[in-house]
Image (cartoon, rainbow, N blue to C red):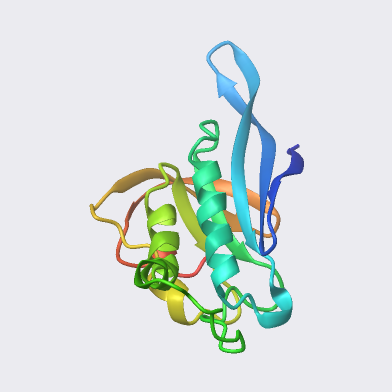
Length: 181
């Protein structure tokens, strides 16, 4: 029997990070023992706007993935969206940015999406997107990897249970390389 637990480890305005753990029974040479497996789920929490990406959400993603970079016990991170959609792309209802006094500050604000992609891409843990509903715009191209990497272990969710499969996955230019349901 699997024992699951979950706790919120970081809450931001538009992003929430949960650590989930479960015990699995493994067979050893001299008997059975349990192994604790931990992973994180980064939730986009703007469900009323179908998780559309505005500047604050992108900044929250940067902060969340920077935080996860120091959580060395987590080897897998799942990016997911609450509500009916994974992400509807850029938030077209967001008003124009407030007045930016310098050209340097304007460049900095315009590149927040690129920095969010870099934060996800640079995470040392395996990152998987749990895509459902709408998936458009910015997240379709994030994050690209600079290297081709093979992973011997991938976690796949079936219902509320995560199974570990020995398969090799090539990271392509898109996060998740397909849809996980």
